[in-house]
Length: 113
Length: 113
Image 1 (cartoon, rainbow over the protein chains, first blue to last red):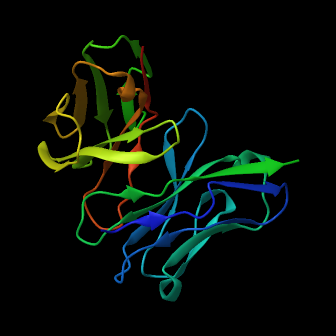
Image 2 (image 1 turned 90 degrees about the horizontal axis):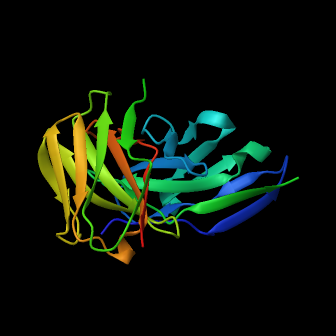
Image 3 (image 1 turned 60 degrees about the horizontal axis):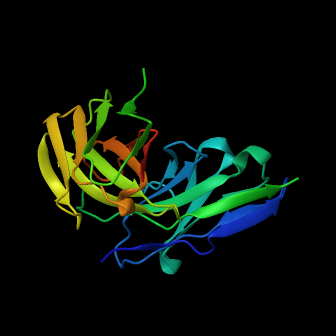
């Protein structure tokens, strides 16, 4: 069955530092891929989604993700962290032909002043 | 003009009671979902309806019964509530195709005492 793995349940970076959140999917055929962010006591918001048009996808709030088929990865990055980026981040996949979207276990991002 | 709205936001009740959560979307989407988020932030799909037809029914106790009176509404009724039902329940909607993302409500925090 299709699954998605997020390495690191908690990532802590200094303000201004690079943010790297890891996501790997398990499928020989690339699924549809998404990153979501959840701020405390809120629902999930879409950060970005992969389309086959480009391997580097730009999202909101300065985030971007790179699709690497050879590594079955879709890692999320941001060049310079801001305090407001502190939140829970979820990688998600929709297998081809499927209706449901499956979420990874989430990574909590903390930002140190 | 909230896209996906669910009520109530908080629900505190005793074991054995029956409760309902309501969800409405004004995005014109054909597909709606219920997800459960546990205390560790893990998101698990429960149900999905496409244009009032049940298309996803994961391994969920039959105490949980979804109802979709029309494609803009998806309600969740829970009978005989148990302590383990305590979680945050999220409603979401999407167009049922490929890379269409989910749009989430703000969640209903259910606490069973």
